[in-house]
Image 1 (cartoon, rainbow, N blue to C red):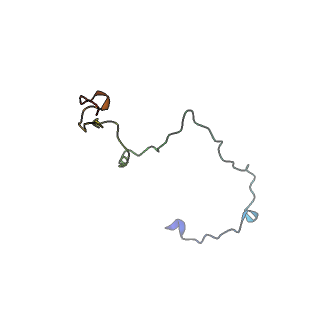
Image 2: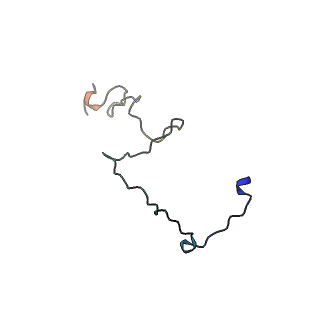
Image 3: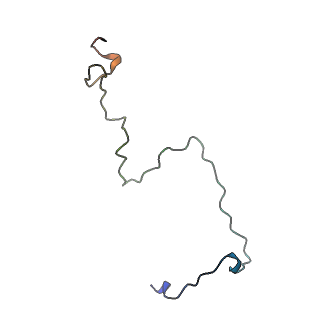
Length: 81
């Protein structure tokens, strides 16, 4: 609280800024990363994963022809109609 006890006055613009002998500060150069950019951001360790994203792991195959779990249409024992 002691840091903010005194009043801070606003300066109207760069014209009124005090001159310093130091060099002007420039932003860092942009470096393009190698490879394709990530589609999603990296989540924090304590953050939960997205609920709308389809998981490839821990999912069961389901046949489109007979609707049974464990195989797909290519290996279906039921002949095509």
